[in-house]
View 1 (cartoon, rainbow, N blue to C red):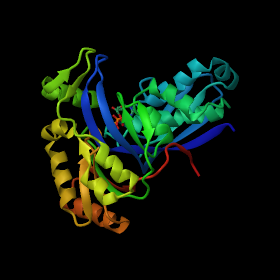
View 2 (view 1 turned 90 degrees about the vertical axis):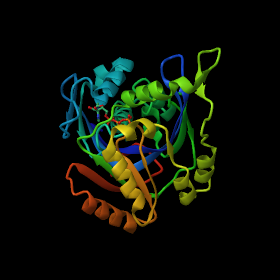
View 3 (view 1 turned 45 degrees about the horizontal axis):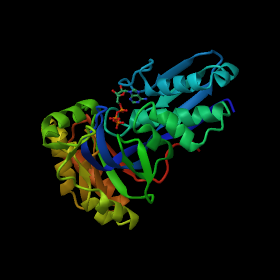
View 4 (view 1 turned 120 degrees about the vertical axis):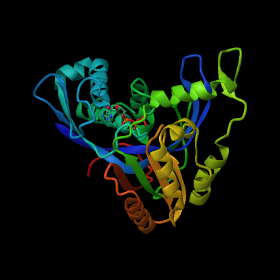
Length: 315
Ligand code: ATP
């Protein structure tokens, strides 16, 4: 085949706990990652040139060497120089639907799709663990985005253990187009504000005295109990992002007040907010209600749901 179209779904965090900081400068995390049906499409074509070109229909996404899609393709070219010289360059088109800089791993899932797509295009035969290992060099969320579903991520987010897949949990998701939260800013601010309460051990690891613990939500996930999952959502980054973004607080509270909403929370480093809703019909009603309450066109709203897989070939 000379081209592949891949569906690259976004993720939300059902749980994000900052356990402490690490000597390497990253935070020690416990996160429950969940793939959702909101997705970008990535088209990868073998080019007649010998270089990598990226196109994207979203004005906020760069198409130069800083795009994670470019970096993923360049990594494959560097790792597999024989295949690169045999098959030549690639043209990659990103059709963006996932809001940018939203805490939804948009760039990471695009990079994951490129790794999967070039593996097919160049007949490399790499296994999922091999692709995940390559993905980890591009970003902590990339390995999860390849296989997707439901997983608990520890370490700096790159150590993955699968959980029973959650399918068809109904969600409404909102994001102000003009609000962007930098993930490094959110973690840095968290460290500045809460780092002093850490207890440091002799290896340089520091941790909070009162960790929240992910055990209860993991149990709720293994029982596929949506109501219990909704009652155990947790995100430590809300402590720094919400005070800085009153619009996000307003949206989160509005979601929580709607009939049929079990819980609402910010995803990852925000500023997107999601609500868990009892049924798909209610999700449509919640979306309409929020649109009426906040007619501002800057607010993007999506009805979506949890899915149990990551990167897929487009039908
Ligand atoms: P995460 O949840 O992994 O922290 P995010 O959803 O907060 O990610 P992204 O949508 O990945 O954030 O965008 C973060 C930044 O990366 C943006 O400022 C954007 O310009 C840049 N970027 C680079 N490549 C891409 C891409 N393929 N898609 C989206 N953004 C990209």
